Length: 298
Image (tube, rainbow, N blue to C red; front, top):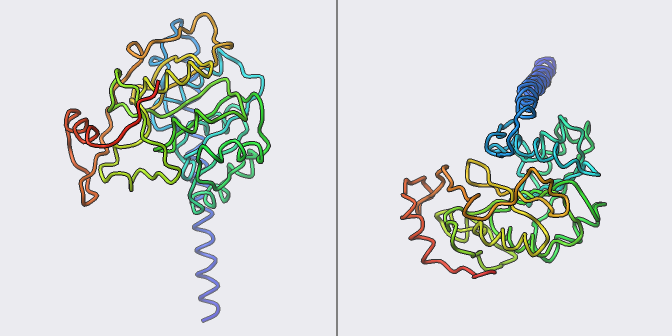
């Protein structure tokens, strides 16, 4: 019996090792393809970010866009901060970490997700910092400073499905050259609104539809301008907006107006009261949002 248990334990260990090796090989293949795409993007003469998009680890085309921006605006420090990363398998900074020599800090509210990150190959090999924290505008600066970041950094990526606007507004501990932040396209290009600030905001609790969160693009562009950032475009998926600190914006990358850069989202994620996915038109989604409170921001 003891021998059988030992053999079973050995088989389980061997299976886990094989799975980990397979994941590493898949990651290397992903990165090899992404490097080819990055070289192709580097040969393009135009500065249209949409033509630069590709995805290795990002949800949409952010890997390509960030490859271009970090190439054309070389950061003094190749450091990043990203929060709302879940288990970091799909993230805006992972390609920079693994393939471009960047280092950084990631944060998520789930202790389980952070434990997964810390058990991964990336954590020990690339010196990634992973911290469990539920981000609010009250704690964002102290969290960043207490983990060793202050002043200029290369990039920050904000995707917390809720208080994104309010957290960026409060951010003062670091001055990133590039900012990536999620916007809620359902409010369109005209409105400048955000969900009311609630330090305990959770998207799934705020409304069953899962479409009530964040801020409109215009709200973020106006905020960025006040903080000294130029809006340079959105990903084609209609989820992420990209900003460059105005003092580092090169002449060939043009600052855009909201109307020029707005992209309506294409992915569907609306749920009904039972939590089931449901197909709604853009007009029906906007009808849901009209019944929910927002803050007009300028």
